[in-house]
Image (tube, rainbow, N blue to C red):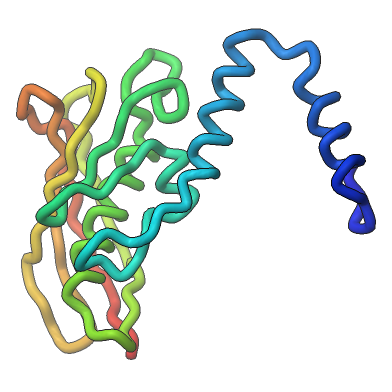
Length: 167
């Protein structure tokens, strides 16, 4: 256990001892986690926020024109090897959130009030694509939807949510 008054050498020794004895598969998973943690990229042009740690851990990447891609792998698939429902929900929520953020003024923030999701087809392949859109933009609430497609363009899931804008 690492104590608050540890030194760098003690921390490195603690981490090394935890890695010792892991299988190759487990070490690959640790490598993925470290890579996601190390990817502290700056916001892309026109975006107010970079991808947060949870999004990076889930395999999300912002693309142009409000689209978000999720790479599928052991970090976000279920026991059957298809996209885990919570990962799909996160993909839709992040895609809609970033789309709204791009349109807000500097002092505004957005929060998810509620969101529902219909799972239509198993999410498989190497990646999925989230395509968000605005249904209605009100004074303090926004209704938005998001279609998630596989690499063949088939609909995997559809989300509909309400988002709250705060000044």
